[in-house]
Length: 328
Image 1 (cartoon, one colour):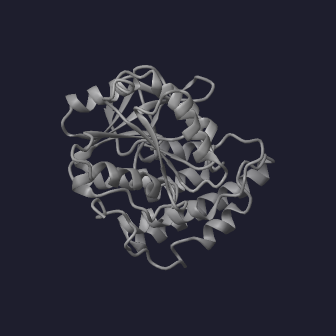
Image 2: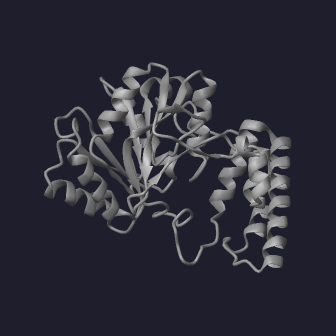
């Protein structure tokens, strides 16, 4: 499943990389591109590329009526597939700005076959320059929020066991959560815990989903032999490596708040916000005193405070959270 929003050229490159993967042309896998109401001709361009290259046997486009975000787009494809007479055993979520390295599909499917409690498996990620990006993740916490904000070496060393980014080796390992840019999910996980939470527009939805899966007893794994190249932030600019850092969009703050309140409660979320605000404020003072360049998005502190758990209403589940909508 590939959710597209105005990145048609990248989606076509991703499809081209999948065309040579074992099992795709032979019909053992199908690829669905969900166009999230791009409105820029993306859907037509992708359909044309599928026809021109003869990919119709395994690739198709599903049109979304609105841009509901990453979880919403994936859920459209998931619901359709789960209603089939013979639903897929495994679902591979891919970002549109990915290129699949040879053998990645086989490596992921063979891994989940070997490990029956592996509900979610993330692949190894390469940057667009070919260098490995060897990270999986721990769940965010109060300590990790403070460490990430303050950016001080001795604090990082003191809290190294709490850091969200976890540097991985060359062997498969169990982790808390994996990058949603390339994530394979066993069908039974969706059947047990529900679909992705559509209350997240972008960001934190894979963290949320992995947490729900682990809580239900499934394991989350990082499998580095499956390689996928990822050009980060092409739809949003949030994680892209840009010369001018853009202002952080409101949906990032909304997703972060939703995650903390949903899984830890309002009190914990408030303390996590205070930890980040304190750490970031100390960092800003130190940056000025040391004459360092400003690497942060504009208005980061004021935007964070405006969206904080401290003054925003408590998260409440709604009909679009995706938790129980498999058969809708």
